[in-house]
Image (tube, rainbow, N blue to C red; front, side, top):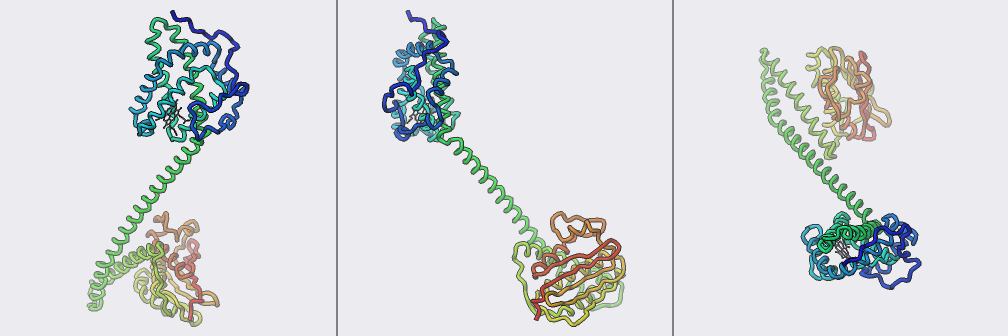
Length: 453
Ligand code: HEM
């Protein structure tokens, strides 16, 4: 006949006084040599009163001490089977098996596990007990075993003991319940201390750092993939735009030939119109290609001596016919002879072309004037039209590639102006606008005169 286990007999439990007041039995049982010398209790500031408080919170009392004493003989008789089943379970899950790859480790751990389990039933919750549980938690944190697997294993402990106990006490459910209740309190005490061990070991900080690192890597990979995609898109666009130049060049050559053999027939006007449209298209294609080259820092300047007044006259001559069709006259004003500049003739000429085309497009009729002057430091070129002008709120976005859209005042997407700004800056200068609705528009190019001969 089994004696009845105690049930919460005393409100003032005879829980053994924690370590501070008790003799220490030397080396901790089952302790890792690495952590053996450590004082983890001190590091979390858990003194004798703190330990007693934890036990009190679990309602651990004298009855529990007696119950554990009763369990001891049963535990000794069953510990080998419990430990075998314990590791059988851990070996059946990938997440825990990975830490138990070699037989030697499992053999060593079974021995330590045996000691650990039996010590739970000692009823001797002294300072050394608390310290050893912290150490075991810290040791597991060191193996990088995630806490959910570690804590989950305590339920295995409970189950393995409960299965065996319920068979043994099948005719005495009251005792079974009381014994399991006391054992459960110890399990929860150990779980709390194990968590402290994980925290002490810096597991949470390490985990967070790992997560942040992983997140940063994912973000970096996503950005790189996006850059690659954008580069691929830009390359493809560049190739298509470049390929357009070939057939367009063909159209221009044929129309030029046809115009040279001008017959005075109506078809001549049509050819002239085709030529202007093809030139326009070519100018836009070249804008696109050169904007991309400038953005990628790949546009090399081809410097040469340039007579700027001659360049303005050339430009005015090229667009005079187109201007006349639109009811505009194009004139050149150069106050005093200009010095010969060293600059990229082709690039500057293309800036002027774009600005003149822009002026023709945005003026109903009137005049376009190309003017230039030079002082000690700068060459200033002004392209002035008598057109309808540009409202201030549009001027701010005129030279920006991003967010270009058609507006009531401008029929095109205005990439020509984006090109002009980038090209002027590439030549070491600037471009600015002076305009007001109804008062025409002047684009002012300023280039360093130091580049003059
Ligand atoms: C109720 C849960 C567990 C208890 C009570 C327990 C108990 C122990 C004990 C007493 C040690 C020796 C610690 C020391 O050297 O100071 C240990 C080490 C170890 N345990 Fe556990 N263990 C538990 C869960 C697990 C789980 C789920 C795994 C996963 C496979 C695991 C794997 C290990 C490993 C790999 C070591 C060796 C650590 C080292 O030497 O660095 N344990 N365990």
